[in-house]
Image: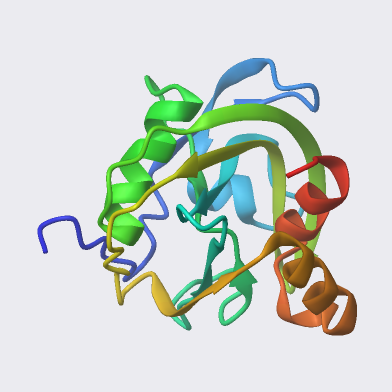
Amino acid sequence: MDNIHDLRGERENQLLQTTDTIGRIIGTATRRQCHFEKGIPHLAFLALLYTEEDFIFLQKRSDKKSLWNKFWDASVVSHVLPGETVTSAAKRRGLEELGVEVEFKDLGAFYYFAKYGQSCENEYCHVLVGKTDKVIHPNPVEITQTQQVKIEDLKKNIEAKPDQYTPWLKIALQKFKF
C-alpha cells in the first residue's frame, strides 16, 4: 500500500495551521509546538465514515501514537495542513488511514483543550461525515483495530466506558446530531 503513513517521530517538524479559538487562521507552527505543554490552537478534523447500512467505522489508535494511543476514535482524524481545506485534508487522510477515497461533508466545528501527560490537544476541530460501500484497508501503522457500530450503540459504549474513547470524539457526539 503506497499510502502507509510512517509515525516514527510523527513528523514533529510538520507545519500545522494555527488558529484562534473561533477558527480564524493565524499562521503556522510545528506539530511539536502545537502539542507540547499548553500547545497552540490549531486546525484539525474528525470524520465519521458510515457504511451503506448506517454503521460507523471506528478505529483504535495505534500504540505508536504519541497522544491517546490505544483509544477508540472516529473513522478518520488529523490536522489540516497549510494549503489544504478541511474536506481535502479528510479526503487525504481517508486514503492514508483507511485506504478509501471518500467525499466528506463538513457539519461544523468546535474548540477544545485536552491534556495528555506533558502534551495536549488544543484544537479547533471540524466534524465531517461521509458514506462508503468500499472495503476499508486500515493502515496498520495508524490503526490497531476497527469496528463497525451504530451511533446509538456508540453513545451507550462511551457512557459505559468513557476512558476508552478520545476526548474529541466524545465532544463531537455531544455537540452534533448524527
